[in-house]
Image (cartoon, rainbow, N blue to C red; front, side):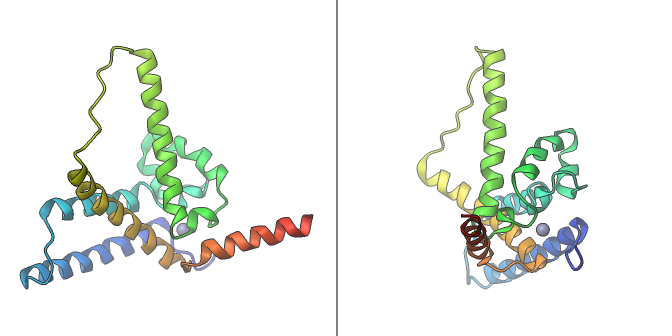
Length: 180
Ligand SMILES: [Zn+2]
């Protein structure tokens, strides 16, 4: 599609935006305008770069040579069903639900792999995944924020507006209505 940035361009845009944001936060912290704990900054960064390099909205291209898919190495094939499920720049490219679809999909893959492992090795000790409440929120909120910001930058670069989800949904409803 003409005018749509490639994976490489998306990565560069996100890295540039991150640098500007990080510099801004650093200055604001020095001036005591904001207080960002190092752990919060680290989690935001992790979420942001996981979103940029591993969980890009363009994973909706099942057969395409997507930069994000390549970064998964041999595990990249796990994203092919995701690409088949979602049309390119459809629901996957919406502002709220789109990023969530990739998180849920990833959760299903991890859950399935854990289930298989448990089946093959029933005595496997389970990792303690429960974090104390306040700590859990402190870890997950910046992680999720970083992830979503990386996705929104991608959507902005694609020229996708925040109301894309609603317009996409309405289009679907109209199509169904026409068929009835
Ligand atoms: Zn895109």
